[in-house]
Each structure stands twice: as C-alpha cells, then as structure tokens.
Image (cartoon, rainbow, N blue to C red; front, side, top):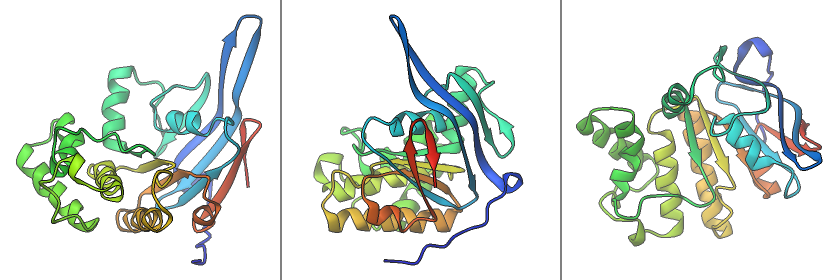
Length: 235
C-alpha cells in the first residue's frame, strides 16, 4: 500500500468548499434528513475518499457537489465563487467546464466510438470538433487506449470502458473529479488499474478528486478518508 500524502488544508487555499449542506425530503407527516449541515473542503490536487454504510447519502452528496442536484440549504464555492445562485442553464454550462464525473456504470454512448465519447463534453460545450478530436486522442493515449480509439463501446472490455469514461471526465480539465464506485463493477486487478489511473490523472492535471467507495484498501491510499454518517462527514 502506498503511503498517503497528507496535506495541510486551510479554508483560504481550498479549490472547493461545501458549507452547511443540508438535504431533506418532505413526506406526509414527517421529514427525511439525508445531509445535515455537512462541510467539506478540498485543496487543488487533493484526493478524498468517502466511505459509509449503504443508504447514508453518499451518492446524493456527490450529486450535490457536482451540481447535478441542489441542496435544501447550504453553500458551494468553486475557487471562491458561489455557484448555487446560478440558474439551471448557467449551472449546466459551468458544470460542463468545471466538474468531471466517473460513475460505477460508465454511461458511454454505445453508438459512438471511444474517441467520440471522450469528445462529447467538449462538443456539448461548443468546442471546435478538430481540436476536441486531437485532445481526446491525447487523453486516450494517457489512459493507455491509443489502439482502441475507433472501437465502439461494445467492443471494449469493462476496464477499457471505464478508462474511456475517465478520459471523458477529464477532457475539459475540470477543477473537480467526482467518482462514484468507479471500480465497483470491475475485478480486483482491473479495478486497481483504473484507480491508479485516477491517481495519475489527478496528479498530472492537479484535479481535486472525491471518490465514493466501499473498497477500504483504495480509500486508504487517498490523501484523506472520510466517513459519511448521520448526515455529516467524519475524519
């Protein structure tokens, strides 16, 4: 196991901060609390694992951190900028530039090649097609898939599909990479290779990364491992 690179973190140096995040759902006669005044900060290039029992709200938290969902109350600061005051269209454009996602299920588009899937965030963001093809090919080479760029999703192994998903997540060089059980559907050896690539890409691009996982061995190789319980994160 690699030795963790513990980092000193201060609020002023944080690339990302979540402050007082609450999320609850109203049902007939009572309220279901999922997140309860949760705080989180990340430095540039820092990697954090989040662990916890099933049903504690880990995926909900990732969706809020990635602005796919809005908290009931709370503040999200990216580089000191409050993002929750943006409308949905503005937030979608901001998310496209700023956040990369890797899910347990790769969510690749089966009718497109590996190269086209990786290009997609840039094309959605209005980037020029030729440049995006060049950038996508370069990132696929970094994740060791340069010989598979013209293969469609169904022609790739599970590990290769997840590496394409990782390349897609970082094509826009986001500030924040969010990974939800990215190795959960892979065998141990393949999963560890994907995890190592996430580490390498985080280091190369200075990505802050948050990974939800049930794999404590991988969690303990990250800078910090936090447990989500009772709606808050605990060291």
